[in-house]
Image 1 (spheres, chains in turn yellow, brown):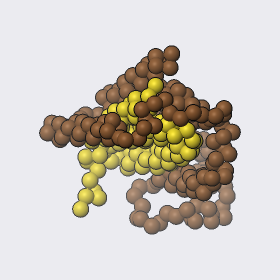
Image 2 (cartoon, each protein chain N blue to C red):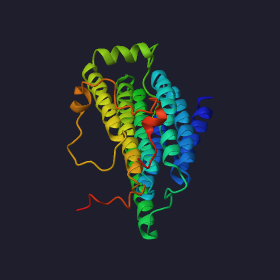
Image 3 (tube, each protein chain N blue to C red):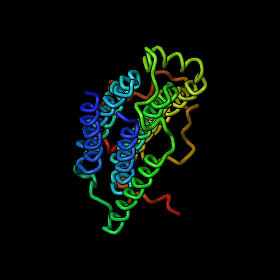
Image 4 (cartoon, chains in turn yellow, purple):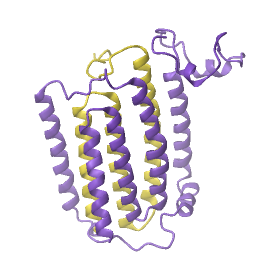
Length: 99
Length: 208
């Protein structure tokens, strides 16, 4: 299989994730779409690592996984905190930080 | 054979991604993402990245997704607005943006001058992508990245505990610090007289 095919799959998944972040309003689903984008980047890293014949891209993919895990922990903690305060779980309603 | 596996996994990955975005119930979105991650692990195996594929299944599809399922179950799905963007105009702008991004990426991929992308990739040695080889790289060449990532994980874990812990109403900013949590001399914690120290009590009811 040509490496180009993997990169096309990565591009499709990345764009689905980007569109989902823009379209959806629930913070849980927005975090899920963020995971989609990170995973698309991971696929591109691993594909380039195979194309170049060295393993640096795979190490980078593992670092991206760690960053994604951190983002999930903090993001879900925020969602739980929002829920405890009985605020609406909707990113359009949570606009207190808007200038 | 590799082509058949690739197309099955690629279609599965794209369908899982589309399901994550399109399904209205966040719980089903999480399940679609689990399927997407498993298909992606198959793609990683095709690319000779064994360790990354194993980590993807165990860490991502296993641990991280369990966290999502817990939060989706805790927050509940019935009162969650799962609708689409408020105005249809914004929705079309979003879809158009995603389409434009895709066109741009495909132009970049297909128009690239990198000859390595047309073929199967360069040759690989035995053990390419195995846990031993990746571990050797992580502990020699990428030691700094490895340590920084582990520190980031520690910071995020402490931050998540502080963010999601039980609060008694609104507190003014600046009253909570990590130092306060660790400097307390009372090691017995804050158990009430009738509490047992179970996870259910730690979560608390939303009314508290």
